[in-house]
Every structure is written in structure tokens, then in C-alpha cells.
Amino acid sequence: MKLGSLPGALTICLLAPSIGSAETTLTISSYGGGYQEAQSKAYFSPFISANPDVLIREDSPSSNAKLKAMVEAGAVDWDIMVTDDTFGLDSDAAWLEPIDYTIVNRDKFLPGTADTYRIAADIEATVLAYNAEDFAGQTPDGLAAFFDTETWPGLRAAWKYAPGGLLETALVADGVPADQLYPLDVERALTKLDTIKDDIVWWETGAQSEQLLSSGEASMGLVWVSRALSGADKGIQIDWTEWTSQAAYWVVPKGTKNKDAAMKALEFFTEPAQQIAFTEFMPYGPSNKNAVDGVLPNFKGNLPTDHLEGRIQINAEWWAENGAAVDQRFQEWLLQ
Image (cartoon, rainbow, N blue to C red):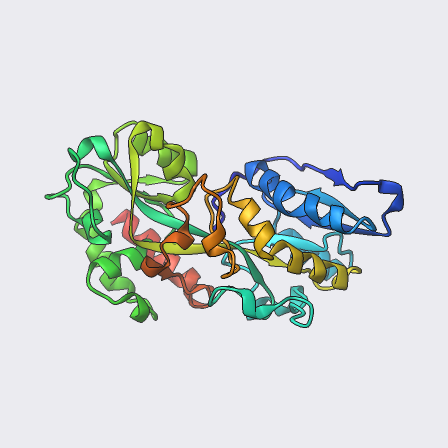
């Protein structure tokens, strides 16, 4: 799930060193806000500088439903879109062009980030964050601390979204190895969550999660890394021992008239120089394995790719097949 801000209204801007010289217009839809601004600086502007015959038109917010509608209507206005873990799977083949790996170098990506219909734009995270003032200098060491309210007293902030890593967190804390999580034992996860159910305060937006921790209402939470870092001046710290991994993905809508140009752009966006530049602006790690060690110092030490040994990867394919049933069970559990 995307961790950046999503604007409520459409935003469009044009980028080109000389609009009159452009022969191809690529329309890219992303999430807007600071996230898309960072992409524009790190990816889009350098690309048009290197390719003066290409104009980039930015659009936002991206929408899986809108992309599908475009394709089904045969009126595809987007050439590239940013999406989250829930889209771009093999089951979405009807709406997407396969990534052309004769243009895009598949070997440069971290494991699990280059698929048939999508490549990762960046690596994101939901992390165990805590208010350091509540624990007198002690630091938690792993997701089990989220469930240990005796050693680590206080309320727990959690995302009210079943596919957001909460069930995986519960199972890991209950002793399930991270590489043996799937198929998820949903009932076991909910039983584990029962042990702290009365101590959970739920959040539904990133701003809510940050406020819960920075205000002291919750002493510990599972929050997006960007929100944990933006609250650092208020005493919020991160335990990177174990964390659940998400990603943003590039996809190309089926029927684009600029397929080859789109693939060339994706190859450029995921090269080390561009991915490293992105880390100047956003606390998300590169998907290119050759960029991981070269990230800029702004967020160094708190990028997900600085802590790959603790990564718990969400299985998006499993959630695509089982998400509806699991969410129904989760909603029932919430009401119990």
C-alpha cells in the first residue's frame, strides 16, 4: 500500500526542455504530493534532459480502477502508472503490457521486485515505531514487543487494514518463521491479536498514525516508515529488527501507443543514479540492487533497504486470491 500522500484533485504538469521539439509524449500517473515531486526531480526531469524528443505529462492521482476503465474502453491516456502491491499481478494481465525485458534489465532488481507485468519503483515499509520517552531509554527488539504490554506498557497503534501486514506481524510474533507465513493461518493471527485487542487504537491514515505516537496516546505502533521518520523530532524511533515490506510499482497500461518509449523510461527510472537521487527526498529504498549501497545520507540508516535482513515480504498473490474472505473475517473479529 502506498505510503505517500494522495491528493484529492487532479494535477497536471508538463516537462520538456523544449516542448516544440518533442516527438513523443509520455503521460505518467503517480500519487501526487511530495512523492510525485520527488519522482519528478529524480526521474522525470533527468529523463527528458537525456531524451529531448520526449515530453512527460504528469497526472495524478493514479487509480487502478481508472486504468482498467481506460483499457476496457480502448481509450488509454496513460503510458505509465505507479501502483501498490495489490495490482500488477499475473491476474491483472488483461489490463497491462508485459514488461519488455529486452529493454528493461531484469537482473538489476532486488529479488521479488521484477515481475511479468510490473517492476518496483521503490521499497517501502511498515515498521515498529515507538515513543522513546515512554520507555526510559530501553529499546524493543522485534515484533514480539508489540504484543508484550507488560514489558512495554501503553496502547498500540495499528492500521485498520487486513492486508497491511498486521496478520503477518501477529504470526511472526507468535513464532512463525517469516519464510513460512503463507498460506496465512488467519485464526492463529487473530488469536494472537486477541491478547492486546483492548490496547489497540486503530488508524486509517498516515497522519493519524503519526499523531497517535507523537502525542503519546500510543506508546508503540505499526506505522509507515515515512510517518515514523517525520515524527522523529517528537521522540518517535524505529526498531528495524523485523518489518513488513511493501513497494510501489511501475506498470504500463495495455494499449498504450508509446510502449517502447515507456519501457525505455522505466529502464532509465530504475537505474542507480536515478534511484539514488530519489533517496534525497523520500525515505524509500531502491529496487535496483546496485543502488542500495549508494543511497544519499538524508535517510541513511532508516531506509528499508538498509535493513533487508529483517524484511518480511508480503505475498501479494496470496492476498489477491484470499483478500476478500480474510477481510470479511477481520471485520467480524473487529466487532466481536
